[in-house]
Image (cartoon, rainbow, N blue to C red; front, side):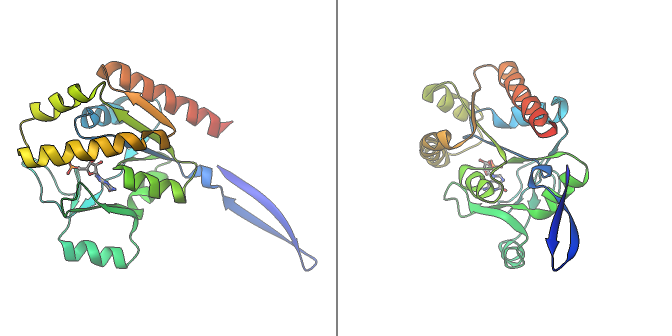
Length: 213
Ligand code: 5GP
C-alpha cells in the first residue's frame, strides 16, 4: 500500500510518498519441533489464500541428507555467517537449541517476498520471532503447538532422526517456548493437520482483508 503524506516546510509543500510499514507484510510461524510445523508450512506455501513467499534462512548447521542449499537453507560456514552479521544482513539471528549453530533471517529474503507483492513467511524460533516483532509490530505471529506434551514427545521420537541428547534438549526448549506462546498474536493447536492449516488460512485471509481495507 502506498501512502501520500503532504508536509509543509519553509513555505514549500513537500510531498512525501512513503511506503507504509503495513505494505511490508510478514507472517511468522513458530512452534517446537514435533509440533508438525514442517508439514504445515509446506501445505500453507502450496495452498494459502494469500501469496506466501517462504523466507530461506541462513544457518551454520550442516545440511541433512536431501537438503538443498538455497532451498531449505542457505548453508554457511560460521565465518561466512559472522561476516554477513557484521554487514547487517540479518533482521534477526539466534543460536537455536543451544546447539552452537546459528540461524538467521536475511533482509534480502524479506525484500524478495515484498518485491513479489507477497507476505514474507518466516518459520523461525521464538527468540527470532520476538526480534522481528520489535522491528515490525504489525507482523502476524502464529504459534503452532502439539495437542499435549505427551503427543509432542511421541512425534519428536517417531521421527527417529535425533539422538536422545538432542531430544532432551528439544523437549526442554519446547517447554520454554510454550511459556512464550502468549506473546504471539495467535496460537493454533495442531491436533489434525487439516484443521490447523484451515485455521491458519482463515487468519491470513482476515489479516490480508484488514490490510486492504
Ligand atoms: P532445523 O535445524 O530443525 O531445521 O531448525 C531448527 C530450528 O531453527 C527450528 O525451530 C526453526 O524454527 C529455527 N530456525 C530456522 N531458521 C531460523 C532463523 O532464521 N532464525 C531463527 N531465529 N530461528 C530459525
